[in-house]
Amino acid sequence: MKRANRFITILIFIFLYIPMAVLIVASFNTGKDITQFQGFTLNQYARLFQDSGLLKLLGNSLIVSVLASFIATAFGTVAAVGIHNLNPRMRKAAMTLTNIPMTNPDIVTGVSLSLLFVFVGTQLLGQRNSLTFWTLLIAHITFNLPYVILNVMPKLKQMDSSLTDAAMDLGCTHVQAFFKVTLHEIMPGIVSGAIMAFTMSLDDFVISYFVSGLDFVTLPVEIYSYTKKPLHPKIYAMFTLLFLLILVLMVAMNLIQLYADKKKTASHRAGM
Amino acid sequence: MKKNNAVLLSTPYLLWMAAFTLIPLGVVCYYALTDPATGAFSLRNLRDLGMYLPVLWQSIVYSLAAAAICLVLGYPVAYYIAQCGQTAQKLLYMLVMLPMCMSFLLRTLAWVGLLQDTGIINTLLGKLGIGPLRLIRTPGAVILGMVYNYLPYMILPLYSIIVKIDRRLIEAAEDLGCNGVQVFGRVILPLSVPGILSGLTMVFVPSVSTFYISQKLGGTDTVLIGDVIERQFKQGNNPNLGAALSLVLMVLVFVCTGIMNRFGGDSEEGGVIV
Image 1 (spheres, each protein chain N blue to C red):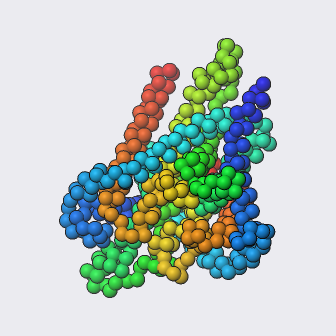
Image 2 (image 1 turned 90 degrees about the horizontal axis):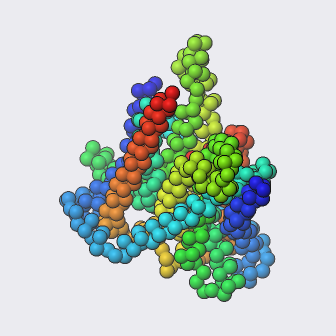
Image 3 (image 1 turned 90 degrees about the vertical axis):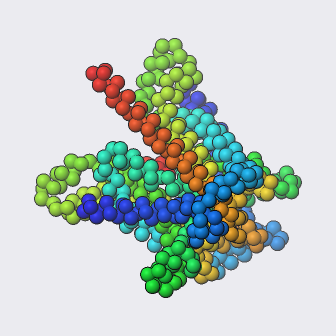
């Protein structure tokens, strides 16, 4: 049984990683065709860094995802503390509202936001071009917020509420108690919410596709319009670099967590 | 004092979410119920929906197939990962998550390169003397694309449920005379139902609404509901009809998740994972 599972697991991982391997191999190809490897070259990487248009698109994507995830993390954390202290009925209503963008298919979220922006822009404000950087940012903040809330709420639930009471007995104001005690306790939730929001934002195609205008486009949206014609191999070079970056980030996060766990168990032992 | 603070802190968020999730859905309804030419109230878009029932049905069938295949493929993987040691678990979990962070457009495009008539798989098959097979532009290719893209959404919730199953329950079943198959069928499988349900939902929802996968891997006979919606908006055909189709899709998804939640009981944790 276990050996069979192990065998299936290996096959599935091969299945998951083969397309990425194809793209990575294609980034070293002298030919343009993804299906035929003609010879090894690093030229695609050089071309990538000479292509200011492509780098600007990557920059656009980073600007939107960093801003959106940062704003959503701050806004969402404050909101989560508020929701946590609401009465059960209001809390349930708030969580239902939070779950709407999570359950709605991306295409519905994208379509509905774009209709809202176009409606408000053209009919109420009389703009000709109603899809801008700002609409894109609003859309990203909106779909990032639930990730932050859903990561922070469980940490608030786990937290011992007598900690904040103790802080206030010792003379802290509400705000001080939040920054000195609560924030520290819920930090893991905030960090994982922020990371999730950032990666969702960076890789989002469907929603951005519907809410972005012509003057501010992110990388995935542009890649989509590229794919109607043959793709230039320098895109594969960018994919390879992003793959390495994310791999390094994930390994680093794991190591930090592993180190923190070890430290924690060590201090527990010392305490006993 | 505390009550007031709670309201003060949560109100801006609730207003934001109402403005950018509830009101947009209202706008979708407004567009769905107006005539594209005159802007007057009209039921024409809703009447036109009938034409797209076969497409909707096809989308549902493909996505259910994809969700079922993901369950069959994903369960052994999740089970295996849950039984590994701590460090191996973390590593494998990371390896399942990693593809989700990479551009799904490019990864789907890689499948085009693999499945094309002159693609990598057909070239390899040719060397074995098997003639070029028609792989791309088939329903199978579209379902493969769905399975490939959304398999991690199945594995992760399954894993997080299986890993929490109390070892002692399994030992107790063994002590009481269950063999391996019985332990699995009577203890492990029933306890992993919440994970199965949230995995199925998380594969079904993006699959049923996709348009990129069917555009790239499918042919003219594998058009999905997402393709139709995308065309109404982006090729300037008829946003009002597109709005009506989006409403149908949304209702479909809410009904499906409603059914899943009913069977799975209150699964608040299911939604947290992805």
